Each structure stands twice: as structure tokens, then as C-alpha cells.
Length: 367
Image (cartoon, rainbow, N blue to C red; front, side, top):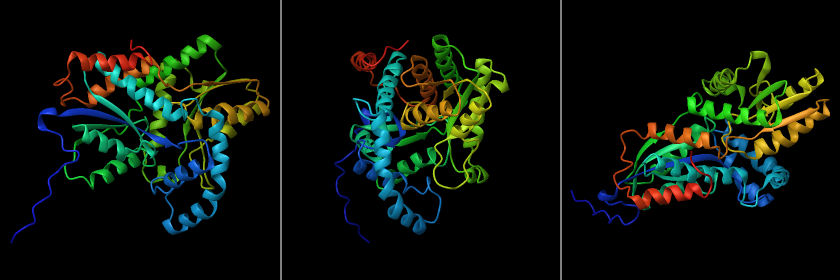
């Protein structure tokens, strides 16, 4: 029996002598522009993911293409336009900045690691970034989701995208996957430091509301650990801040559709608090490591309006970790732990380290 010879591999085959290590920081995604056509493309990809919407495909296809993609893009585009930055979508801006700064913080610790960012939905896609890393000679890749709490609707979907890419590649790099870091001391400390800084500047509210992104309640019953990990993050953060149980509340936002989602819901809770006589609230979103539509528009605009309309007097939104030095330092330390045993210094010369440091310095100096 004879076999046809394989064609020579000409794309993405790294020479053995230049083996390098990379981190791919993966976030949810964002449209390319705050316009209805861009939102239609983005929502079509996002809402077509069976990890996100777990109902029969045929039924959902009719709902998605017959109703949602005809009505929602224009409304969503207006919301995105209200928070769009000069550099682009807030989520993309902060994720890109975190990737560059993470590289610099790792360089300060003596590690030469290529750090890229990707979006599960939208651009740059996970597949395109993996293609580029492979072309650049990377043979070891740490997949680092931007979600501290694991969920099948988010974290697992990132992994799905990696697996799909690998299914069509002959020479697959070594992969490691970070499931979660909801209880990492550095992450909790960075959140607490961020909140304390707000309190030093603006004073402290009667109540701290910790709002996490919601998911359908059935995911909890099916074994998804997300709800439990959100609760643990909140408990550890409250302990770090020295808050008694009656001084903070855990809520869930961004409900979509008519199904029952994790409760209590953020906006109804804020309305009830105002009606019960709470005059000032501070709201923080610990599950988001960078500000985005869900924090800047849904919380800082819509939820603020609902609380004040219900009789509240002061609403303070505490920004996400974004480019916080303590957060980037903690993320670098956590990344080093996850990279243990992989070469991160073999080909690192003084110029490579200096380049990484300079890129990070342009966005914020590591401490």
C-alpha cells in the first residue's frame, strides 16, 4: 500500500530553535462600530453560540433571525454609541491595554512572554490570533479568559473556540487553560484596593452593591459553578473590606429573555433599596475586569436613573479594575504561576525585555 506524500508545511511551522511562550487574553467581544449593521453581525455570532442560548436550534434560529436581529441592533447601537471611546469600544480598549501592560509587568519579573488579546465574538477573533501566534513561532500558549468566575456560557465557550481552531491544525501548540481565578488573593486585594480608593475620594455609601453578570437559573441546576463562585468572590471581598453582611448585597444584571435568571436582579434591587429609604449606594461589578457596555451604560446610566427615580439621592458607580497597577501586578503573578515549567526566559535578551517594559510604560508604569 502506498500513500501520497504530504505537501510540505509552509505556514505556521516554527523552527525548533525558536520555541516561545505566549498568553492569549480572551474577552467576550464587541462590535466593530456603534452602528446597526455592526451590531447585527456581532449579535448574530454571539447569540448563535449554543453555549450562550441553550434552546433547540431550529426554534432559536426562527426567533433570532425573525425577531431579534431585526429589532435589537438599532437599539443596541445607540447604547454602544453612548459609551464609545475615541479609541473604540471600551471593552476592546481596556482588554488591549491590559494585554500590553501584562507583557510589561512580566518583563519586569524577567519573563519574556508574548501577550496578545482576542475576542470570543468579533475582532480580533481567537482563531486569527492563534494563527498569528503560530506563524510567529509560538509553541506554548496559555489561554487566559478575562472572566474571573467560570461559566459554561463564557469560559467554556472560549475553550470551544480554541478546540475548533485546533481541529483544523496539523501541528497543534501546547495549551494550558485557566478556568477561573475568582478567589485568587491578588484579584481580591486589587478589587478591595479599588473600592477603598473610591471611598477615600468620595466617601462611603450606606450599601455596597456587588453586581455580577447574570445567567439563566437553569445553569446552576445543571451544575454550572458560576453562581457559587460569584458568591465566594463577594464574601472574600467583603471580608477584605471589613464589611458586615448587612452592609453589602450581591445581585445579577443583564437579564435577557423571559426565562428565570439568577436572582436578585440588580435594577429591581436598587429600586427596592431606594423605596426602603437607602439614600446612597455604591455599585461595583467584580465579574468584569474592564469597563464595558454592561458597566458603563447598564449600571452607571440605566441603573443610576432607576435608583434616583425611585427616591435615592446618591448613586456612585465604582469603575472596574481596568489598568489598575495592583490588578496588573496580581495578574502577572498569577500568570507566572500558570506558566510554571514552560520556558519564558530562554530567548529573552536585554532588548526584548526593554521593549516589553517600554510598551507597558506607554500605558502605565508597573510598580
